[in-house]
Image (cartoon, one colour):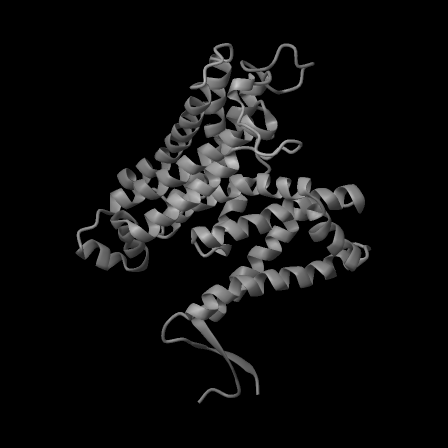
Length: 354
């Protein structure tokens, strides 16, 4: 008698929503073994990594703050992922959006105009869309693989940020640090709760989730994107434009990633540095799939991913572990999510095959 897997006649809707829960539980279980392997007390590690960041209202505000760019990027990527448009370059689009919005802040820093912040948000969205338009054009014009082109553009964006903060935009009074000068108060997002760093970008993120839900579930364009992802031949037979699907999928991801980048520099950072993002654009892909490409699921999965970032910082401070341990947990989560998805399409069976 042995374990085997039989193909299901159709994907299991129950397992589709249970597999993320199973993946999270397995991540937590193997996390205990990881702490043990590192010579730490597993229960202390669990306490520091998953409980300590939420011990007070400030910790909860930090959780929501870090979840904001994740949910923005993830909901934008989900629009394309539903149509099998694989935008892997959200990290680069986030950086370019930050540069575009930051340029507006630096160029008009002395105006103090109430229109400055809306202009920065618009510039951030346009910057991200412009960067996403490059792989969209290459895909629709030359049939270039958007996975490769969008990913390679990430490194160009990173080098562009580095060049600007080391060169033209470097603050002359910044003690030679690679950073721009601090933004004017008119260019900063308003704080939602005094004594914390949580700002209005969280409300923008919630609004993006609401708009994403309406687009994907209540609009004809969203229906076209869904059909294109589930049955490409049926989509073509119905006359849906494949090129328009690519453009919508890529630009939606670029728009939200650009706004996410702007929310970082106009929020907790207040300037542009080399470290705008700790990898939000890449982590957002895990958030999107963990949330099943659904805005409601994305909200909760972004909170979990945010907790992993905060847990890594706590583990570095209290357990003398590198902060990169959070990326190990992200990898475990993705690994177990992919493994758990096997049960969506296959049914486990014990015994010999008939």
